[in-house]
Image (cartoon, rainbow over all chains, first blue to last red; front, top):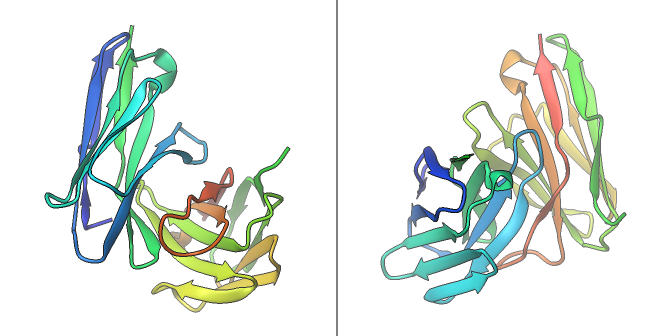
Length: 108
Length: 114
């Protein structure tokens, strides 16, 4: 987790957009996963980026810049159920290294 | 339901005891993992098995011993439990190992050592 950096917490209102940034060490890098984890539950897969650029999946999009060691997860049209921790994970050397997660709090 | 399942969900025990956590997946995957999520929420890989063979063994005390009787099961036995072992332990599985393999997580086992 020490090689992955993401903000600890972000707060936004329902209907808004939030962007969660993640930086990682580029050595041995393969790809970048995003997982969502609701309190007391298992992490669930959201996206995997290997190539540079933006990948859109409904209200959630994920972006990768390999040269900059940077990714972001974009959550659009926020809903209350999106309140959760979002984990960035670097797929390097055949295993996942997770960040500490960004706690997103959605307010009415 | 196709899923990764773990038992027990909660485990409260005294220091020095020995305990086991079980994991089963019916997704037909050939690779299984154990992760530890501590109070700071870092999810850290402990072990990984592919087709019952150990492929990842991170710096974990040898009080922790994984066992994979078959591809669908990966159990974790912990000897002489310590206070610092208190955490949530997640099992996960994937089809194949290495690059870009999406891992699917079980619900977690919340271990509290008193």
